[in-house]
Length: 51
Image 1: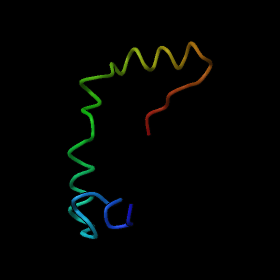
Image 2: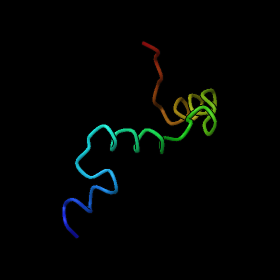
Image 3: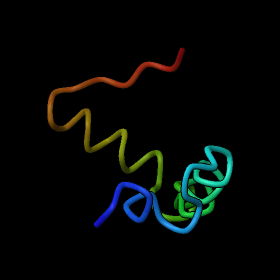
């Protein structure tokens, strides 16, 4: 595998690579309930503080 092929179809085009990564990002609000995650963190001994 060459370094160019390791970069995928966008090759050396940085913006195209970043756009490809962005489109693969999951919708975190769709998959995680903030209150459930906060409760689980508190149960494990960690705290969540909004900035």
